[in-house]
Length: 339
Image 1 (cartoon, rainbow, N blue to C red):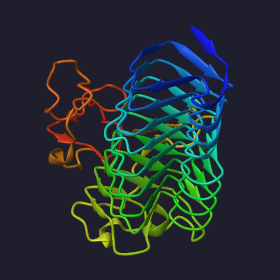
Image 2: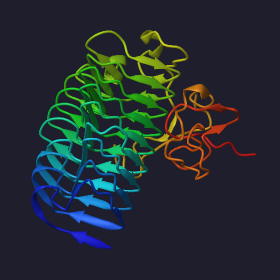
Image 3: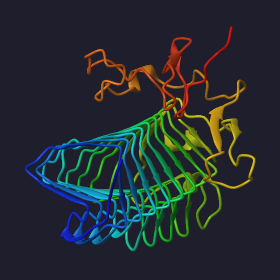
Image 4: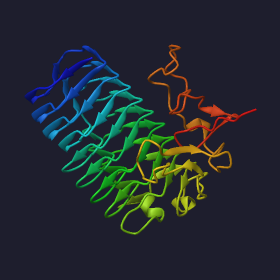
């Protein structure tokens, strides 16, 4: 294991410029950048980063933990981004990057002065996130867990947002400036915004949401429908999802409003956003077999290593079979029936 501590203008720990190294089992800790990418900065680069820890890194501008810029196609797998800080995008920032692939990563306790406590996607970025967890990230303005801006189109599958906070809007996710994220089989639970949209807030943006759970998110109006998802203009496209406060009122297809039946939303410590929280479904959950199979995304990261990236995603966030009993569940976890 390599531990890196540096201070640089850009890319405090590592700066890759038209370079694609393989980085594994490393810890990037207490690095800082005067502008971008406290832990790592990638410019037109496609490194493979596996099983690394980015902790306590900072950037004065953006990307406290790391940054992908200008067509970087970084592969990030099994990494933890914890307690990183920047003006924008505390854990990771993606700017004009078409297809970084981020799988099975944890973004926790990152913070920003502006937007995107966990991740920021900006200027047409199309980051693909699979099986990632956003927990207890904080934005001093918008987007506690994630901030998507300027026509960004990230694709999220099997992700969890819990305990994230925004002091303005979008505790879990904030979308602005014609951004259009695709959010499939994700769980937004117990995120908080001081103003609007504890779960997801959309400003002049239209996400596509399917097979998701938005429950117990809170804003200034409490835990009603618009605390789960709120838009300044129109309605988001949400189908086959469990939404507190009346999902059917959003005009989509197959939405339900019954409690999802999490095993233990607060865990044994009775605290939101800690590692003992269990957002898996009880066997009585109305979210079981209630999703839409056709909504599943392609297996872009080839999770089952069979060489077929055009098939549907085969696993849930636990690595278990994604479709059981011929129909997909709502949320990040698939209920595994027993004989």
